[in-house]
Image (cartoon, rainbow, N blue to C red; front, side, top):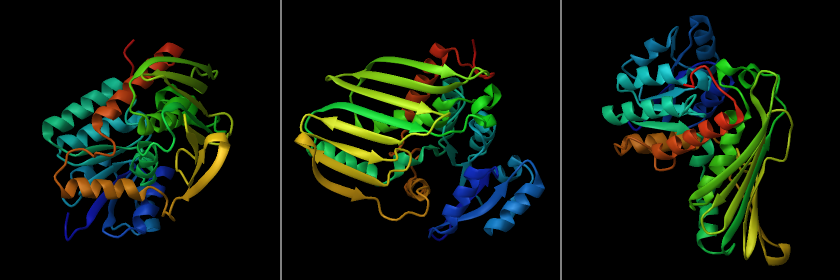
Length: 329
């Protein structure tokens, strides 16, 4: 970094890359220095739209550019592996959009490579980096909910017509696109070991999971129920329930409010999240913090946690008969 400025290179020009560019455009101490696409025309148009000084017509050109502090990988997760591995081999820190990779095997190879090269690597599961997470964890730690007994998380969007949902070669299905938020919700707020998992799904004609339900039995008498769907909308709410109270999180993939209740459903208070740029800013700030301190991973989303969840999602998919071309069968 130069003069406390994190220079980010964005790989890909899709909608999630646009959201990253919009976010960085309004941040202090973080700038978008370059963008790359497999089409120079797309990269150039993207750069002009967002005021980015450098555009490249290949991912390799950006990876080998000398003035990039962090590479943000915003391709579909089916294409994360090759570009991330190339970046790591060139010693470039990476923030990789969720889902981290296509499967656990790819994830383990990437993490091992980053650890061997001592290169910073993190998954861009943006909810992990948001300050409201620590607020909720403190409420639980303070005992205001009593002993935890049940967590629920639901998320759904009507987008079953999108290729990234319907196609196996794009690692489709609701689980990797949406269900990952519900799993992370439970893992963020409950440290108990998961002892048993049951699940089921409804599949598309192309063999991808469109709607799924997942239940965790956890140590200490705690349960969690997670639902995700790519073919219907729902309230996207999460609840954390204990023996003395509960709380409701509005929008588990970008919390906006948290309502706290005590026994007999007595309302205690509502916590509103401060105004955001988009909510993506926190993951870039976390990367800047890590790089400034010489860390090779972020404490907000440790790589072992990424690996744990990727392995879980493999096991779930395989139990449903949902496979990608990258999977070994």
